[in-house]
Image 1 (tube, protein in one colour):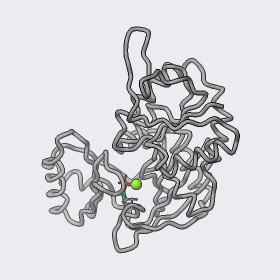
Image 2 (cartoon, rainbow, N blue to C red):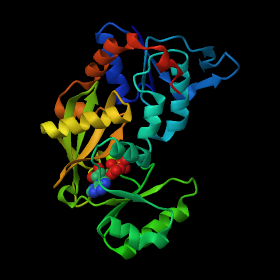
Image 3 (cartoon, rainbow, N blue to C red):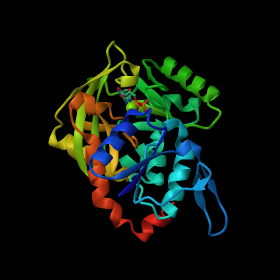
Length: 303
Ligand SMILES: Nc1ncnc2c1ncn2[C@@H]1O[C@H](COP(=O)(O)OP(=O)(O)O)[C@@H](O)[C@H]1O
Ligand SMILES: [Mg+2]
């Protein structure tokens, strides 16, 4: 098969692993730096260009869009979908996953348990908002944050109010701000389940190194392999499905009322391979082999 990996290039570990596994399985792989692609839009003639030429047709495209390039990256993926290329992650699903509020709304609606969340533009409502969450401490987070940046633990009502005000003041691009129930039972730890095609193929527990409540590896947290309970596996698989992602990194917290989904990552990192010894790259390529041929007309329209 002719496979394209849309990414920032070979310097990226996950890109190198995908190329390696795809080549091992006999595929013809090309890494496309989507940042350098452009689109020409004209009646009946929309086309992605790369290095001065129309991009050729691929049997499968694996998008690995960076979170700070979501808009541009999903635009390129959307155009490739419209041209009839099979894209492992759909542009719509990537966009949804990049917004914590949008994801939370979808997950909750379709029966995936999440930490209770309230959203408002008004700090005047603070008493009411905190009542909804059974009081402090609460988590405050930016809908578009990543790597633990933009996630704050507010211990008191005063702190919550001033953090909210500060966020709104500096927030000129209209990002929504979420107030969330603080899951204290698992503060400082969370679970990453790597889902491919409706199955968990690797899972790890992340732990913050100091007393930070955030367990992100980018914040210095470390990971270890963990076996999920059947309930956790079910929740992870369902969360990926609700988000419309065949490949997803589902972040869970163990709470006293069962597993809660924190977020669903559309381009999960491959550090989990080193921690768990599982070959997630080959699972992804195998999934692509099984599914690329089944692209139907509806997928092609799906903007
Ligand atoms: N409601 C919560 N209760 C307790 N800890 C939380 C909560 N939300 C987030 N955290 C901690 O903060 C970390 C970062 O939050 P997350 O929502 O995953 O944002 P990011 O996209 O920045 O990783 C999580 O991995 C978790 O350790
Ligand atoms: Mg996270």
